[in-house]
Length: 133
Image 1: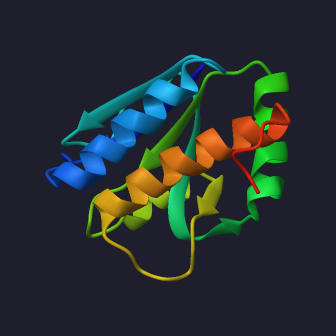
Image 2: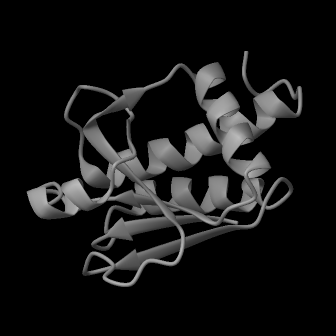
């Protein structure tokens, strides 16, 4: 299972609609759970991957292979999208795996919508569907 944990609430209507749209599309490929919380998790029962500007960058095709590898490992994976001010340094140290959407700074709500879209794109690539052109 893939879990997406966003710290803080998405208030922007456009971003919320996009997130919900891509989450709905993802249901045909995998069980994906989207959660919002005001706090970083303390008890973690799955593999954590932080979305952080200092993380590893991928092309969409590389990201699809990364997702394939995670699915083959058959682990519960949680992607955490941090608050607008970023992750505290001590939390970053606890989570060795980090990926980046871009080195550019973007609004955290837009980053969530973009990440869910890229997750959908990854699955469409893996299933040889025409979404990724």
